[in-house]
View: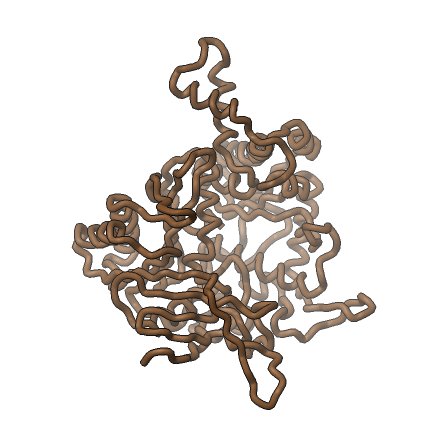
Length: 518
C-alpha cells in the first residue's frame, strides 16, 4: 500500500518488579527504578570553591525532600500546580532508594580567587578554557592517585563565570595564524634552536588543540586521565535552582523538573538503568554514526559511533579513524577500511557482552550510505562470520513536510498526535516524534513540529518496524527525565560525543561506556 497514514503507539517502559508504563516519572513514582545498584549509599567526590561546596550540601538536603510542582499566577505568586507534564518530585531517596548524604566522601576546595585570576589573565578562548579545566582535573587526578578513598561519582561545581567565559563564542581573542604556523613548523624541526623551550611548546600546542568549551574539554581530559568515576557537572546557579542565563530564581515549575533530571542522570552514571524498553526485539541493536570536523584542519573530520544495545538499554561509544570524509558540504562518508573497522568494533563489543552476534544491526546516519562504505560494513560482518543482517537507515530532522491536524466541526487546539506517520512507500516515510501526547494533555513542541524523514537506504526491513524502533529510541535519554525526545538516542547525542572526542588532540581511547561522555 502506498501513501498511507498510520499511528504508532507510545512505547512502553519497564520499571521495578517488571511493572510497565509509558512515562518515566510515573514509573519511578509508582514502581521505582528498573535496576538498583550495589550499595545503597553514594560515595560522592565534590570539587569546587568553598562557597559552592556549602551550596552543594544544601542542594543535597533539598533533593532528598519532596518538591511540589508549582507555577506562577498573574501576580507572580507561586501556587501548587496540577500539570502532568511537570509532576512533583517525591525526593531522591523516595524515588531511587539510594542514600545521597550532604557530606561528601571527598571534598576538594579550589580557590575562587585562583579561578577568577585564570579567567582574567588568559585572553585567548582556548587557553583560558584549558587553564581552568587544568585547575579541576589536576586536583582530581592527584586525589585519585594518592588517596585510598574512592568515590562512585565526581560532582564538579562550575562557577557561572566559567560557564560564561569558557564556551564557544565567549569573549577573547582567537589563536593567531602565526601561532598555528609556529606549532606546525616546530613539529617538523623548522624553528630556530633555543627559540622556545620544550615545555612552552607543549603548553601552546596543548591549548591550540583543545576545545573552547569547558564541559567538552573537561569530559575529554577525565577520559584521557582514566579517572574511574564518571563526572556530573553542576553549575553553581543550579545548586540554588536559579536560571543560568539571568541568574534569577528559576520558574517554580522548573525546580521539580531539575530534580527529576539530575536524579535519573545520577542513577545511570552510578551504573544502573532507571528504566528500559518493555517490548524489545531480542538480538537487535543500533549504531548511530557521528562525524565531527577537527579544529584548524581543513577537510579533516573524526568519525565515531554511539551504539545502543536494546537488550538492556545501555550504550557504548566507539572511535573511528580520521580521514577526508567530507565528500560535499556537511555530508560525510567513510572509506571501506574505516567502515569495516567501525562495524567490526561494534559487533565484537556486542559479542563480548552477549556471547553471540546480533541478529540485526540497524545503522543510523544523516546521509545516504555509498557503496564503498556499505561494502566495508558487510566486510566486517563476513570476516567475523556473523549472521547479522545489516540495515542502513537515513534519518533527517528537517523534513520538507509539515503535517497538521484538521478537526471537522471543532476547535483544533492539540495539534498532530505524536507517533503519526505517513508512509510514502515500503522504504520511505515521515514520522512525528513530537506532537500532542494524551498522557501529558499537551504537545512536546511549541510550534507545528518538524517531522523526521526516514529512509531505508541499504538492506531490507519492514518500514513500520523501522518507525517503531525510532519511536522506541526517543525514550532512552537517561540524561533528561522527560516523556520523550524528538530524535532517537542514536542521533540526539551525536553532537555531544563528537565534541568530547575532538576536544583534545586526537588520541584513541578504549573508554566506551556512554556514561563518561554525557
